[in-house]
Every structure is written in C-alpha cells, then in structure tokens.
Image (cartoon, rainbow, N blue to C red; front, top):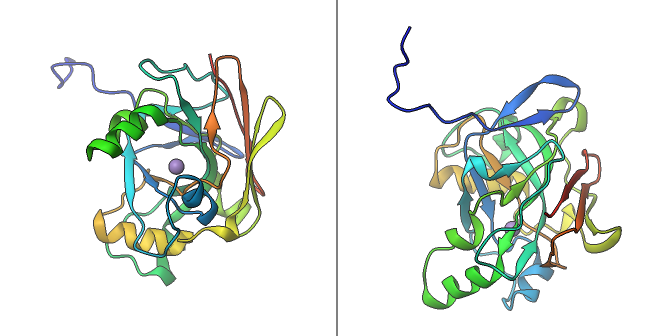
Length: 230
Ligand code: MN
C-alpha cells in the first residue's frame, strides 16, 4: 500500500523507561527559566516568585541512550544546565495544583544545553531565545523512571559532574516553583498532552563545556544521565 504522506513522516523521539522494554514517546519539551534562586542570582537577576516563564525545545533535540552530544555550530560558549525532567502521562488544561501530580508518568534527568553567547545576544536585542536554547541535540535526557517506582521527588540532590568534578549542585527543595505549581501554571498557558516533558530549571554552577568533556548528571532517586561532548 502506498504511504498517505507526500514525504517520510518524522520519526517519533522516545526515551528509555526504567524496568520496561517499551519507551516514552516525546511530544513537546517545555523548560522553566530561573527556577532556583542561586541560579537566578548568578545570571544577574533578583530571584522572585513572579509567575514562572517558559521556553521550548523541539522533541528531536533529545539525545538519549547514553549517546554523545555534538558540540553545536555558531557558538563558543555552550553551557550545561542540569535539571530534573517531569514526564507528563495524562494531558489537561487548567490543572489544579492539588491534582497536578496525577498527570505525571515519571521523572528523569536532563541537560538544558545552552548556546549562552547566542542567548545573551537575543536577550540584549529583545529577540526570542530559540537559537540559544532550541538547537540540534540541545536536550540530552536519561531514562524516565515511572512514578510507581520513584514516587514524586520533592527533595534530594541535583548534581552535575564534568569529567568527575562537581560543577553544579543543588536540591529539589530549592525549586522556586515546585512540580505541582509548575504544571498548574503551565497548563493555563498550554493544554498539556501525554508525552510532554518539563525541564524544571537548573541550580547554580552553570558553565561552559568543551569537546571531550564527559557529563554525568544525577537527581537523587532517579537514573543518572551520561553524555560526552564530541
Ligand atoms: Mn534551564
């Protein structure tokens, strides 16, 4: 039978799932900006509890299964941002905070890789962040652990090692907008769908990577993420 498409349809991006041979199909990737006070300060902002702000990455920017991440073009200042990733299993709009965790399938460890030089330029010019944030391979992400195995982590170390040295360290209990509040707020802006990921923000210590660096990210209770910059 002939294909109903005039071109090859896009490949579905997916993540491994702890203890399951099946995979988590990725729909959209939302990222929360400045969600830890000490990171807001290191970026030159006063932390506050104004409504969180979001930006996006395309689903096909995921790098997973321990694969290498290619250092992107047009930047000399690519930064690591280690983050807990929330995997949405059940969609909805205007989700109440006290029901928000029912929409979570599981959690993982991700890197919100950033072309900081391009992002800085965009900020200065009042332009969108896409070139700084949403480039090819900008979203390394590890295994998704289902809530049935890890519960809903709300405290515990968030850490990034680069070549075995600690570069970023924080705790989930330092999130300005916790997971339920983030889901509740995000779902007023966008109708969430199964397969959506939410990168929940990064603690302090962001900095540049170079080719050859090995990045190992962890969130207490979840499966570590490992990738090499090539
Ligand atoms: Mn980030």
